[in-house]
Image (cartoon, rainbow, N blue to C red; front, side, top):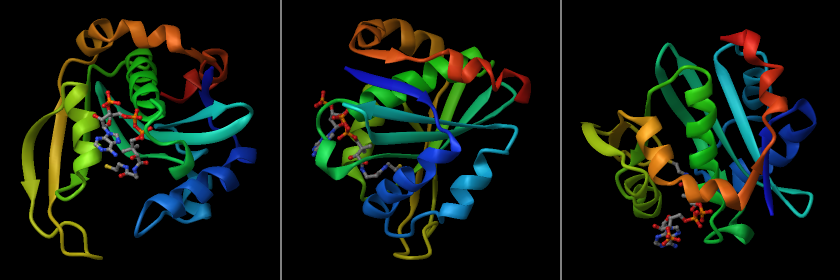
Length: 174
Ligand SMILES: CC(C)(COP(=O)(O)OP(=O)(O)OC[C@H]1O[C@@H](n2cnc3c(N)ncnc32)[C@H](O)[C@@H]1OP(=O)(O)O)[C@@H](O)C(=O)NCCC(=O)NCCS
């Protein structure tokens, strides 16, 4: 079974490895590390058989949850880890007071767009040439009702264990 918990300092090397395997312009290890002391940031890691196989980062700002990154180890894709992380991110975001969730996705990233569509994200904008490495535009997506999506996908809850206590400790940060 997949376990989801809050990212810790010791996880950053593994998270950074997945980051570099997944993105053309990856975040540095130092940038990921600094997120651990960012009051509004919440980073989730998914573990399978004791190995970190994916992560999701988000900032909770008032009642909005901004996804900064989500990636799954290429060797573990198409197994439901992305769905698990997004669902868990919504539950954690809801817990910290967010009712909506937003993110930007490259216009050519059809796989991620398909994942977001399944979780009720809708296009609310477009930023031309947003990504300087390729000149691609960014599609801005919003889900304005996290609790409804969580409720409609509640069966996912039975497929993974969310270690709430690792998030409780950080509850003083919002
Ligand atoms: C996007 C990403 C996180 C999905 O992770 P994943 O664990 O493979 O996703 P899941 O197995 O949970 O699949 C979720 C849904 O995404 C879509 N999907 C995933 N892989 C797909 C593929 N190869 N082709 C088409 N759709 C795909 C499907 O709709 C799938 O639902 P389904 O299994 O019911 O058909 C992963 O592909 C990834 O890390 N990509 C690189 C980083 C990235 O692009 N991040 C998003 C930045 S905005």
